[in-house]
Image (cartoon, rainbow, N blue to C red; front, side, top):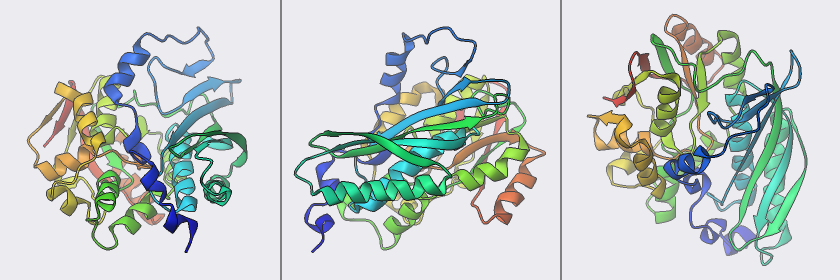
Length: 343
């Protein structure tokens, strides 16, 4: 019998993956009073916050820096490490950058065999290498609840950063991964996930957004973010409010992972669903059915890129992603105004 079978990692966590994120509304309040030091070279910081910080080194290079970690969302240590690494690396890709270097951030009970942490690190190292970066060290502390993630440094051209704040009326919105990881993971914890649902969700969470970013780069998108713990609607709300536009999402176009829609119809929800609904508050209007709303509020782990791009470039980008064997769904549009409509 393996260590994972005798000590399921998820049994040691209160919440797993990006569903463990601090509530977005509270986080906004917390950060509102923090003003970064004045620096003309700090291109992206807390005002407003984005997927990563960006600091200009010279006219050709800027550093992209991010950190992300969370408790286990699956029991297999290697898979947990790989998903946590993918989630952190994807923040760099969401800014248009290329990862260079990563450091582990780990917290583990001393009672767990050291081989468990070794497997977590091995899984992370595989994803870091696939991203073209180096796992160069890190820091580990004792904790009753396991946690793992990465601090990642990458580079981007200072004039080719992909912000959340650039969406323009007339753009279309594209999404490069299906929704529902939180719902499926919760169903797995509850013992009600249908066959194959967890495996499909894990496959999605292990997919780096690197290839999608490589395809997207020549298209010069107006705004990009990755969909993670605040759910599709949380991240769309950020994009809309920071760009000063109105976003209309088509409920029928929202793509679901295998089993996710059926589980949502059966009432499966995470705690992150409620926090995400609290976060967007009155900014989102919806006449969609409860299943579509559940998918749109569901906290995602290592979700896809959300891309705002001029409508005339949309079909070519969709075809290019499809030609590269990558998923893409057109889920909405950008209009003048404010707020978000899910219809």
